[in-house]
Image (cartoon, rainbow, N blue to C red):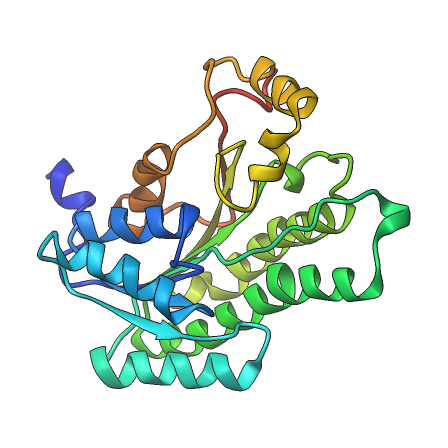
Length: 254
């Protein structure tokens, strides 16, 4: 019985930003639990690499190119998924960007870029997915939060603003969609070493500050998020909505 609670066999999952980093980890975790996984990324070649990794494990997957800052591109991508699979059960709204700089260095171009991907893009992907999930009267939406959803981080003013917005959007969307049997939650990873966060680790002082504050004694890996994303995507979380689960090795608690 417990095992079946986490079984995603027959489910169709969409992971944005699946071409690398945590998105790739989410995609592989969902496939490992039995889901068919659509790997969506602006970089189609990267999405295909993730797709091939999943297929090597004898799971169904495909790669779809999409720019989530473009509403027409979102609609086209979601329609193609519905045409191929006939349903969408899980959305992992993972795609995000960061440009680390002090507030006086932030340009309008950088501001718009971060906002367009992390908040606007996430919002409209969720909106489009919700249209289909409402029709089928079920679904799981999992948004990507951050430590920056809860605290301020120097050099990340715009990023933290978007991630704070993700937390509030998750709560509001969960209320609106609850009557349709759709659960909306978020995952807030701590410090994980990816291409986006690598600049932080290249700075010796910043790297030391990060590592010394993690009670678990190490930075996170994609595997550390696998259980959380499968839990939130499965029937095990059917009565949980509007929540954000922090996965950070104890960093925030300390």
